[in-house]
Length: 63
Image 1 (cartoon, helix red, strand yellow):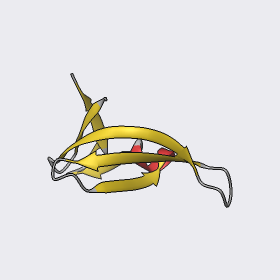
Image 2 (cartoon, rainbow, N blue to C red; image 1 turned 120 degrees about the vertical axis):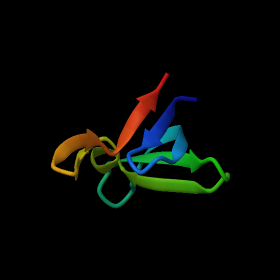
Image 3 (cartoon, rainbow, N blue to C red; image 1 turned 180 degrees about the vertical axis):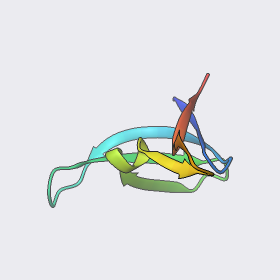
Image 4 (cartoon, rainbow, N blue to C red; image 1 turned 45 degrees about the vertical axis):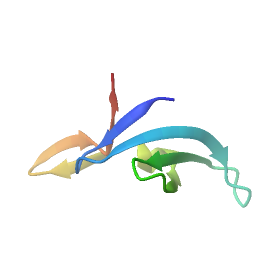
């Protein structure tokens, strides 16, 4: 599974890409280090956020 680091520091694993039944939009399903499962729209997961005047990825891939 691919790992991502949240811009605030947390480490997450991408579990899968799912489809939201109501509008067929793509959702990212991901797991936190503590095992909790989360989901968010794909475009939000991969968007850039403003941190101290700089645009950074909300979730950046970890090698």
